[in-house]
Image 1 (cartoon, one colour):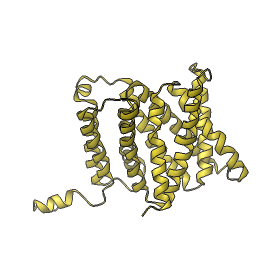
Image 2 (cartoon, one colour):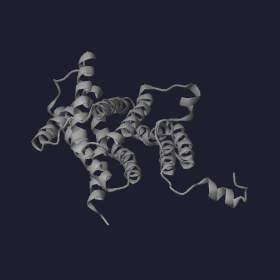
Image 3 (cartoon, one colour):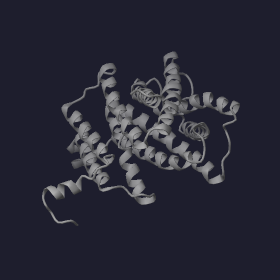
Image 4 (cartoon, one colour):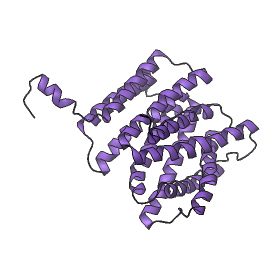
Length: 298
């Protein structure tokens, strides 16, 4: 049954999936593209938050964490943009989707409850998938290029964002959180772009149009839809469903960008997504195996 939360989730997945394609068109540099994605979304949500009186300053710790979330998310988008432009939309999308693995590792060290055995099994499988995806030669020679490195780094930034935002969203509304985080991410990326001499103008008309789509569709509409789904569905189900955007992005890149998808990349992507799927599997994977082999309990 297609309920409103499920429809919203599908909309969010589609909105995110078109983002790597837009970035790969290279109408604007990766860093400044990330800045305008945040700034354009902020320009629309800030007036709404003010008019509806949903923008409020929470207590100090929650306020600082919300601002830090914005910096992490802005950093995630910035390095993801560069990863897409330096490699392929397919590879960058798959690598950044390792974020559930980093979330689990962060949970193990800093939060409770601790990850299950299934998580660690899934982590090993996902890492094997990642190695298959980029090729064993990369790891044998340690020849990690900037596209690969930034793709991984994007997932790490996003994992930090997820871990912290869970605590913040338990205390403030979605609109308030998104507005505060967009303010901090816009300021952070704006200052960073200025310091590095990034161009803030001089783009073509189609370049500005692509930036507008990124801000309104890939940021504002996508994350409002996903946040709505998260409120009404199990978080694990939403997180698992979001992995579909990596596959959809790869298909769109093949159609619109003529990106070559090799059998090795397909195999690596399948293994990677299978590993992440195992981290969300509720039933224990080890106990049935021990029973089947008739091993004594540990």
